[in-house]
Length: 304
Image 1 (cartoon, one colour):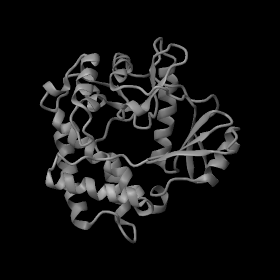
Image 2: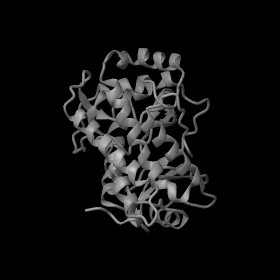
Image 3: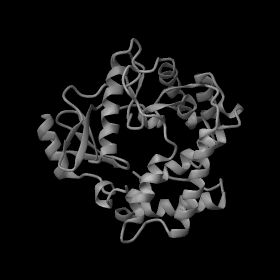
Image 4: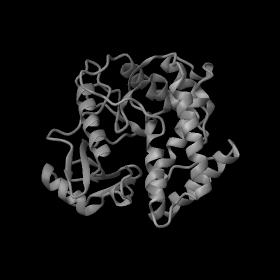
């Protein structure tokens, strides 16, 4: 059954932040919004902590709990892969929000694409964790967002575009289900890119953050920053990343399927944000038009 729009179309704000901070025992004074996409992410300067807020739905509760369980387990491995969450009982659910709390780790200078390879190799070498994990579901965020959007008084996606997106997504999901993946399956991050790397103060390497989408799935899902896409990353950087990881996904014909799935999946956050954020609405239309026309020369831009 579809959720009402109010349950998952708007991100929690400052009232929810103050409530969850009071429960967790942190100070929200001078909190600074870092970004709003699938979560509202705030920096708490007094405690040097980051709070990630999602709407309180059963799905977001499950994702948050999986994220906490997975990162605690990963942080305890002989070679850490993930930034451990802040100490304390998590996630915190209050005021219509699901919140998780993390140490703030400024990253200066920023990570390069090649820096991503080592933590991914460590991640993919690990066994399956000893607790339940969801399986990867292609374009789940897109399907959810389209369901929510159609219930709005003024949907962000036009009816013709919505029908095209649904047909395209279902066809790709069917192809994914019938695909054999050369690297096998295991625990995957599913959103591995340089913005999700922070320095490991104990070991001097890099740790992955933002594990909301972690699940069991093909390891190739974590190599998508190494394939050509609408963001037009420099080819030399992509090649260095794949060489450092030790597998050239571009030698496998199935990489195009994963590229297409990822680009559709990424529309979900923009569909949610579009009604209250004109820049997100404009970027959403820009992306849909480029997908429908098949114009791969069009460059996409991330909206903070």
